[in-house]
Length: 276
Image 1 (cartoon, helix red, strand yellow):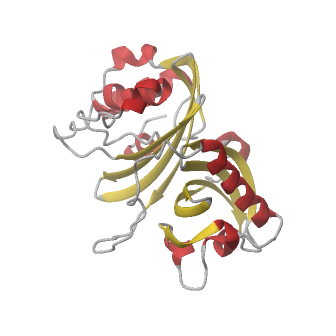
Image 2 (image 1 turned 180 degrees about the vertical axis):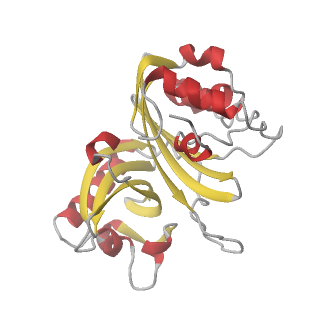
């Protein structure tokens, strides 16, 4: 299957710049899986070094994006396609805004510009012994947000490692359990919380109301936390259509203080379970 620009975008990597480096932070030195993923973006995607792919990707790499081939061969084909495109300008701003790690899982949140379109991406990688073994994603086109104080991807980016990841995950887990059990969940949301999802931010809706819509059938797949940030990978059904729904929460004072999300309709002919 020929890789088109959109297929390459499905791996969430088109505009990773050559200058991509994790922000200097002593704590980062111990997070080897996160460093590995950031190095993958930089060296394989940004610099298109196909010869280094075996150092990052296992042979039977499992790809949950249905537009990209399975295995190491799929990544190689994608990078070979990227080689036909101009390299990002040196010193270009990195599209990676947030990176969260728990154990073998690393979540990244990106804001990318491609072919005149702006898109939000939340990637999820699984690693084993320092190698990338599995990948999931969700991609959502974004509207023009010029002049807006709160956009789909801006806001807090630095993780507070003084906050317990276990406690942060517990708050989000309890919040979702209340929603799934059709109970009030507003007690888990800070009065001054910041909402980056325009649909949830609509007047009279709110995060709990949006996620708890009666017609919204939700299934949680994974909850991953680091410090005060919590990533949730889920699916929901609405009007006969199933969506991938990836979220990032920031917890402060045992309340949800900030929320981002990316949703993507599962393509026709693709089994939902294949994307999770």
